[in-house]
Image 1 (cartoon, rainbow, N blue to C red):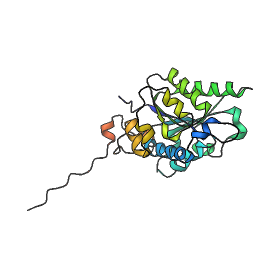
Image 2: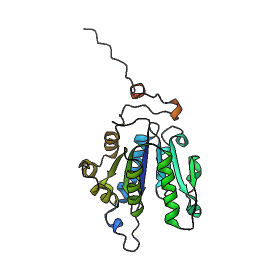
Image 3: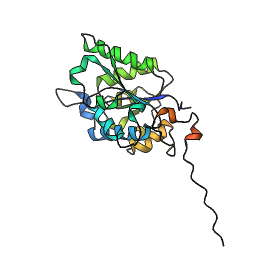
Image 4: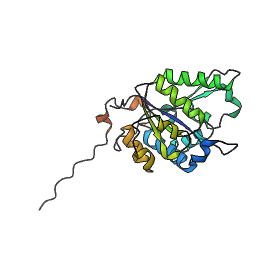
Length: 224
């Protein structure tokens, strides 16, 4: 049973081909961008979306979010470690809901602080894993430990480290690898009805799912 009042977690990145990055060999960059865009389209205005800032993913989220007609700063929470302050994408400023976490001299320690804070401060219904490399696997493992009731959903057709997430889930559905209609796939796996209304901010959203559904007027029977 999906928790309609919990947030959705996104873990995604685009592996680059520099060096011997094995994740780049299977990653489909077009599929990664398409899946991220589909997730934002399905979720925004209906569920809160939370992710750890990534310079390739944050602009993708913003590009789709700005066209949906909702106050995306109310629907997304972006966590960003101050360790990467000199690499922050300009889109960070557009979200106006960025949580900056403590920086340590060590990169891995800084990321660990950010992830623990992100998973400790939010209740998640599901985690979406798209593409990625080593960091995605680290987030998946911590996500499972700290959010044991949340459902991990690896979009396997995007490749990268997400394939290893899928291998760690014994009952991963075959359509996660085969269905390239990401909007339909995400509606199905997240349990978000196609007919659910979008709201400008969470405060406007009814608590019950039935009250959020678009009701089409009944057609009057035609006279003989």
